[in-house]
Image (cartoon, rainbow, N blue to C red; front, side, top):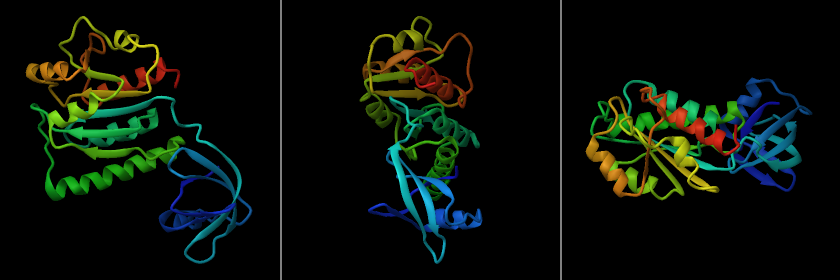
Length: 243
């Protein structure tokens, strides 16, 4: 069944769809009477029947309302230092598919890429579009926000607010992600902090520890910067019963 995020209004049992999603429905040549799913972007799905595709808007009748099945029970935010090239796009797309609620980029000492100004604004718009497309494809109930923080310190401050704040460092040999996830029986929010190419400086690891982050490893293999957040995220989803 075709799936769209709502850009319009709900009035009683009717939904009006505007903008690019209305155009997309017309491009698909959907006809009145056909079924579609419309998500409000806040975790609720509406099973609808198409009524009209005339004019600039599209109208549909709500048949059924239900929570979005694609949303995990744990809210997990991915924090990753700026990677080079198009690796950020891979991280965003796959993180959304795996169930991340948000993706945050930040600068760290070993970052080679440090987008700023107009270039960063352009990247952010593209990144959010990638998140939206991935959310549609994977049946998510929200469109995860992609954002940028100005410093490593601000990333630590935000990430440490989670009930399960994990900071991944390849130099950690004693404490694994499995051990970290087993320290609590219940948690609703998780933050995953991973580095760019080359990982983190020892001084940054010390800062993270002092901020309350749990310094963890993901095994004895060295993972690429675009692999590490996805491995961590998949581990969290499996551990919490969301895979």
